[in-house]
Amino acid sequence: MKIRTRFAPSPTGLLHIGGARTALFNYLFARHHGGEFLLRIEDTDKARSTQEAVQVILDGLDWLGLNADAPPVYQSTREARHVEVAQELLANGKAYKCYCSAEELQTMREQAMAEKRPPRYDGRWRDRDESEAPVGVKPSIRLKAPREGDVVLQDLVQGTVKVQNAEMDDMIILRSDGTPTYLHAVVVDDHDMDITHVIRGDDHLTNTFRQIQIYDAMGWEKPQFAHIPLIHGADGAKLSKRHGAVSILEFREEGFLPEALCNYLLRLGWGHGDAEFLTRPEQIELFTLEGVGRSASRMDYAKLTHLNGVWLRGADDARLREDVVLRLAKAGIVVDAHAMERILHLMPGLKERAKNLEELAVSAAFLARSVPLPFEPKALAQLTEDAKAMLGRLVPVLEATDFSAAAVDAALRGFAEAEGKKLGQVAQPLRAALTGSTMSPGIDVTLEALGANESLARLRAVI
Ligand code: GLU
Image (cartoon, rainbow, N blue to C red):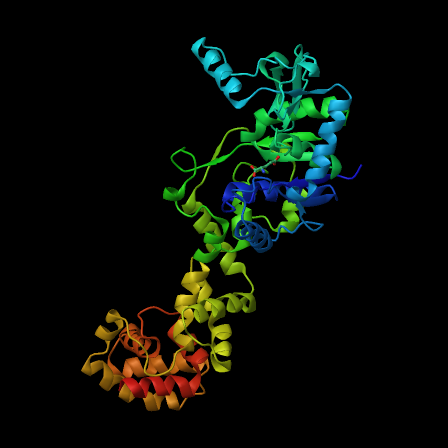
């Protein structure tokens, strides 16, 4: 049997990290078993679904490298099929028409509440003859669910979970306006898409019992279910804006690497010994549902930030440059061919110092600028008259080198000694003049990356 999983987001808001983790688990599980990972956009709530939200989901998954093996299925296009299955259930006596009006249902609810009973539909049309139907009322279709016995779920994460049929009322599968309900549509789609494993947030657990009733009524084979715990904020409360970034694209904006985020989300609530760092191939090899814990996990932004720095330092320089160039362009800084080379050249030093791609871009900006540079106040403070005079004496010394890091380093040491200064006393004003800031990778590699012409032009502009 080919393993098939799916990620089934509703395009009604942003793609948040909980959703991203659900997608990741589905993806890894499918890959681990050599199966398929599918995407279904659950856009049946026409009032709340938007095209922008669909795009955010597609972009987010693409960014995370969680691409589906087939084009997405749009649930809204499958309505006729959902209706067909509802009609089949009706024809087989597994469902019935309910002619209750909205007012009648409201009264039923209020009465139940007043008597401190759960507000359930009482099944008043379950066995009633259609000839009793009020004229002009369009019926909804309800599942004729069993009233005795239990629904037993062997959940792959939660273990055995049981609910008595008596606790569930006859759910509507087709509304009186002819549209399918969400619970029904999901079952029909999962069946038709040959989904073998439904991995989703444990907030769907109660839905699953109702969905199982539909599978059983149709005599369909059920998929296996795995309900994964939700992600909470560090304080244990439901994750929200006040905890920090929540939307996937916000993490991208802030400069997180998709590998770091996936690595973090995987480790959040899934473990394999002490393994902290896992590449995608390792994740695929090791991922099993047995490793998923049952309690809610807590989002730890500090840990994610740390992990991001480690992934950043290990990332390919050319790829990092690509991202840096995009970020600089957004900030209105054009990167010409020279600057492209300089950025790549200095990348090993730059990435050592950055926690995220945004910081990396900021730290690389000086390489793309031209004289006159903008100066940070702290850098300006370095450039006293004495310092400028010293830089004036330094220029011919540097000019005599080939601007390789080694030659520059030797020349600077010699110059500092001759001036009776510590190396740092030379390097700091020099750095300020070259970068407009007080922080950069080693001054020798910085000079090497800028090259003779640009370095000297910057020094002369200050002097
Ligand atoms: N569309 C549902 C959601 O976004 C998920 C449904 C499912 O996974 O079965 O929460």
